[in-house]
Image 1 (tube, one colour):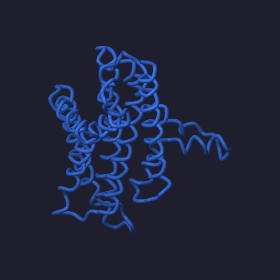
Image 2 (cartoon, rainbow, N blue to C red):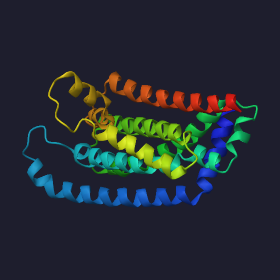
Image 3 (cartoon, one colour):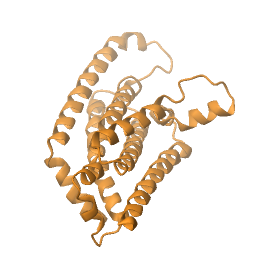
Image 4 (cartoon, helix red, strand yellow):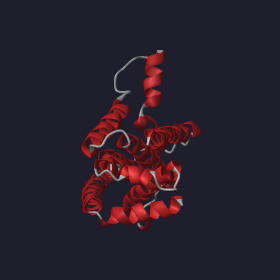
Amino acid sequence: MILVIAGRELRGLWLSPLAWTSLAVVQAWLAWIFLILLDEFRGLQGRLVGLEHAPGVTDLIAAPLFRVAAWCLLILTPFLTMRFSEERRNRTLDLLLSSPVSVTAIVLGQYLAILAFLLGLGALTALMPLSLATGTTLDFGKLLAGALGLSLLAASFAAAGLYFSTLTAQPIVAAVATLGLLLFLSVIDAADFGQNGAGGLFRYLSLFRHYDALLLGLFDSADVAYYLLFSLLFLGLAIRRLHDGRLRD
């Protein structure tokens, strides 16, 4: 049932102008950034030849491109996860909750549909640096780690957005609240708190600090666990919120 719901929601997403417009704008922006990074790399090649352990194509093109892609997903995802808010505003959420389908299946179906769309966008992004494999030497380990990090970020963004969409009947409010939380967790480690407990906690909570480690090719199970726990937490909160609404009805 989860896959049935996911397939239906994904088809509905692709039929909406928001999905196609977002995909076109993001890909055009990332393609422009990719060409800029490629041009800068060509200009640096002469100076990199004599350097020991000089950064390669993956470090100077793929990693920065993935960083920009992550910020694009952060801005885009809140506006793709407003479905429950729209259902509540249109007064069709009660009808959905009264169906014989479990709340868990409804939430996970919505989540998988959004995640599939975001992963498709991430795959198109990864194809840009991958296209250089025929003429240059790519570090496929770093490339895969970066793609994994982008996928985990997308999963976290989608889970947070779905939860906030269950809280209000105003889709824009849900999107702005999601964007605010994601931005806060992205820059939470910007302030210097030294090595005290607060500084360590803020660094651990930072969404992008774990991502930067993966972009460097440093695979740590703690980073993967952080994103998985983040996603599970907000998915659990979304399920609990809708379950409570079903019980009240």
